[in-house]
Image (cartoon, rainbow, N blue to C red; front, side):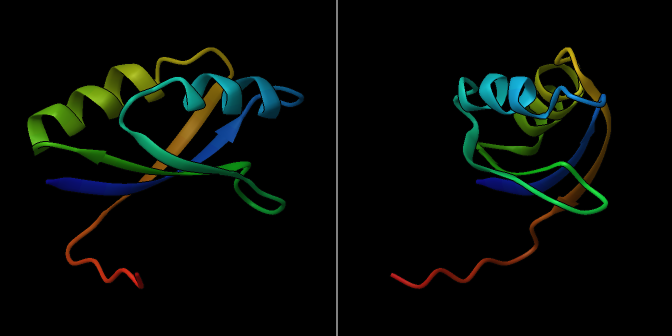
Length: 81
């Protein structure tokens, strides 16, 4: 499994529209609308890094209204059950 946290800047006024589009992507586990430097944070999980590349480069960055992204690739994960 491959995981990443993607921080997204949207065009002004497009935050809600981008959030709705992200919710439709199978690889998006959760998404958060933010106040601050970034507009949206998304947790992405895929089966491998090749699929992660495809998701990041075409599915997320290609969404209308996405201006810029910062991707943090997960090295290890801790989950509270």
